[in-house]
Amino acid sequence: MAMLSAAQRRQAKELFAEHLPAPVQVLFFYADAYAPSTAAARALFDELVPLSDGKIRVKAMTGPEGRAEAARYRVEQAPALVLLDEGGRDARIRFYGAPLGYELMVLLEDLIDVSRGATRLSAPARALIRAIDADVVIRVFSSPT
Amino acid sequence: MAAMENPRILAYAVDAAEFPGLAGRHGVRSVPHTVIDGRRQVAFAGRYPEAQFLAELQRATSPPAR
Image 1 (tube, each protein chain N blue to C red):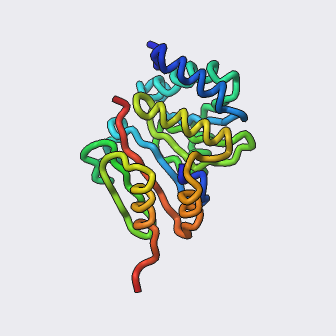
Image 2: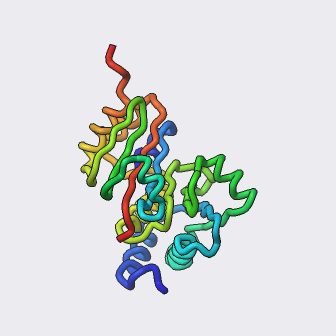
């Protein structure tokens, strides 16, 4: 079953062509290869990667090696996605589950931000965020439908 | 996006239906629902525009009043 509609596929292709200057690495952590959410996330990237002209690179991780890497990236659930820039630097953005529905747009925007190495936040917002001197964890719960 | 601007911030986008235990532990009753754990915990329901989100982020991270 296709994860992307024809319109989503067209939109992703256009966004990637215009706004994805550098490769982005996606670490894909999974525990159960047959879980529906694992299959959905894998199928999603099977469709997204060819639309990115090879700029989105997915590395699947599971088993003991995957668990060790997951701990390093503070990933406690699976399936999970971790976004890294071209140089392997952690963008500190994780997705738990397959980002479908509304979350697909969030994923596409985050991939673009990581590729560009810059967010779309206003200058005052960036200054305010950069001034934060406490450890912060932000969790945004949503639903794919 | 905030996580990219400050290395002390880590951001998770969670499918609440796929991870009901995690959602339950964070008091999620509807989506979208955001929980910010900083110096204190701040949570809100719905999607906030940038200015309002930043206000909540500041509320979660401002130093305690003396």
